[in-house]
Figure 1 (spheres, rainbow, N blue to C red):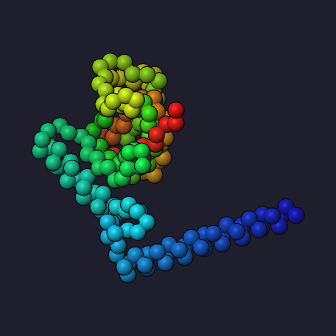
Figure 2: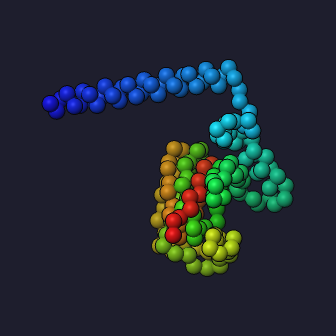
Length: 186
């Protein structure tokens, strides 16, 4: 009995993989034959290719560097949820500020580059507030009781609201990642 269950599960898994591969091939053929413009998508899907993301990050970084030659970050809001929570792509060429979000969890996926994520239990030192209550972000200061995690492409990170955090690219490298803000339920 046990062996027949395992064989059934493996057969089901192979079937799903085959279906998924077929749907990917079909989608690729459809995409190649009929390009779709972003503003006319019937199902409101937002799509940006890797090249498009790189292009607007580079343009933003160049623009920011013209205004301030020590800028080490460029970002672009890719979309917003119904509550206004942004999904962003971020490029860091130097250490980010310490951040703490009162009402937003951060879900991040590392796209390219390498670095370190520092988290801790509190922040000391000068901080400034961005936004108005109850949805405020705190920037600046120093993380107390820090914990460091290495970051590489493909890593998935979830940072709950009220957890201080800071992204630091590896020296000589840049760090590009997607961040999706999710409103913390009260």
